[in-house]
Image 1 (tube, rainbow, N blue to C red):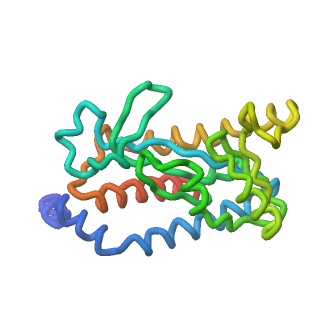
Image 2 (image 1 turned 120 degrees about the horizontal axis):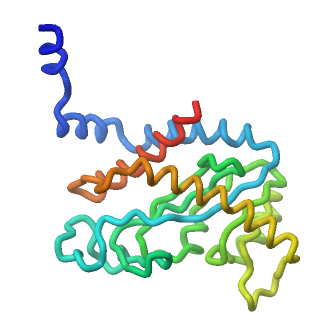
Length: 218
């Protein structure tokens, strides 16, 4: 009888989703920011990494079936798998231990530099931020250095006017492996298919998976 009453009181899937939406994204983001502040305090070296990972709604060949994302800006490319997809990219700043500090969701085709300009970079003075080649923005580098004493050091392109030493390049490549581990652990939390009927619902679930990953460090 007790077990029967317990099952009867369980929320249905649809009601549970409605309650998640009723909480509101700002509240969820506040919860994330509380954890991010802790991660910054536990990062005495003040080294950070910025990068992105794709979250497909569907592969390119199934776009006709996709009702959530189907604009050209939602169509991105996964170089490692040599295939196109429709969905989002999560651009994330993590500390050297791979703990998320800040993130933004953007359409799959958005230029990385464009999303980079959306970051607050609320980091301690003298922080060092590594990134890949897609995050080269000399103007933003100079602004961060002058206004916040933060060094943004992405991997340099072959024709870059701001090349780094081979030693620095090596340290940077080794450090950046932490962000790959972080992304792998987050995406391992995803189900085979993230069920949603609206883009807002899809994005909320991504945010919740990121928060769930952060809570693991409590």
